[in-house]
Length: 307
Image (spheres, rainbow, N blue to C red):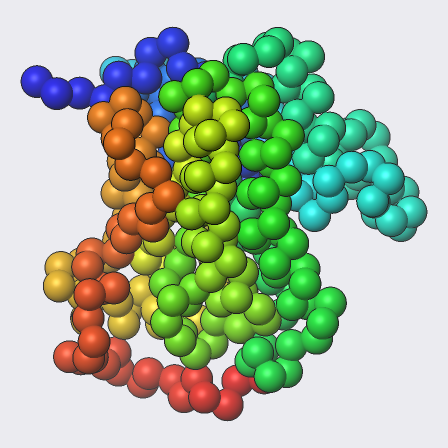
């Protein structure tokens, strides 16, 4: 039998703060395949996430197929808007959710990871990060600050993380990020520069595949996942509508699960995909192949006038 075997591999999943999103599902799938897992969490959610772990609130979600629990070697603080601590504004540094957790920049994450594990210690890097503060606004109504924040956190952060963590990765390692079809097609209601950020992420995936492949010997791919009604995705405001629409119009008329995306990520992080890099892999029940709607959900909203 051909199995995904990641025993002896160490993974870092950035963008996990609960058990409800793609990041957590990917961490669990990698653990099922035998990898050891660390995660990076947005500082305002860090204490809540750690408390849920300590109090057993996530025990059911952490249960693996053999009955063992998904364990995190480390839970690091990370605000991917900042490359170094000198970039952090004073009001953020002094905020009670930030001030006592140490260096939460991307550089700080790389330094701490190296201190914990040493050189050539990382095999898998998962980028499950996005933030579009004006995602509910049409692009025409998006401010420069909102647009640039979307690009900074949702796409440039991959460049910054790979630049700093790439030297710690073992050759034949793998990097995977999460994209969305709005980077290629118009999705009304997915605004605030987020569509631009996903387009940039996919473009950067191709360039980083070449550069990081030559420099570090690692592969870089992205998954264009269909919509899922996670807590994080609820910020979009229309995610339930998108889930219903995809279900009605996809070749496989089913609701996508986080596990299906996670299994694709595990494959892309495994030796079984050693010949794949620079790719955008669609995991969306085939919706990306459609050029015409075949059904509409009842009471489908008018998305053309959202501001």
